[in-house]
Length: 181
Image 1 (tube, one colour):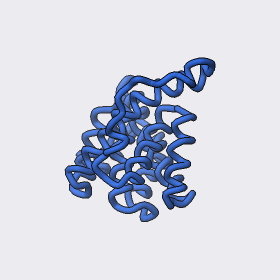
Image 2 (image 1 turned 30 degrees about the vertical axis):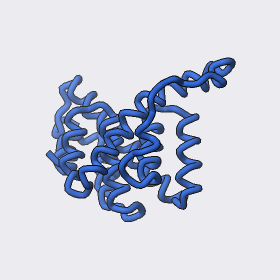
Image 3 (image 1 turned 45 degrees about the vertical axis):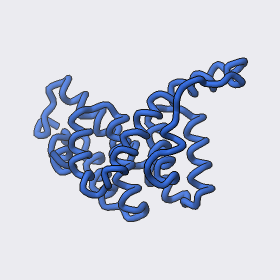
């Protein structure tokens, strides 16, 4: 499976998603590793097996084994952190001053450049809707030298991949096929 396969599977009413997927797959704002890792981490965070398989197949040759593992790890650890810190932020009070007491070792040693891992974590945090995490990761990547345009590209990838996953899930549930638009 590939990004082209995903585009073919999208119903006609999701034409904008097809166009966004195409343009983002060819984006040059991010380094090839940053772009590929953002796609992979976003696909995993979007929780659609077909989207994940297609995107990993598309980008695994761009990423070193360590970078592929790091992109997967970003999705995994943000799956944990985004829920925990969203709770802390929503409830406030004592929880903000308590240690999380959750293991997060991969954040300190992700196996790739810290900036890339933070960018992937930002994309996943955007998908998972953790404002506190989005703010934290955005600050780190901007201070690390990424431009607003680069950050926006990563979030555009996350938004598009998530929308593709949701649309394919909805289309499957409704029996919509690409020609049915």
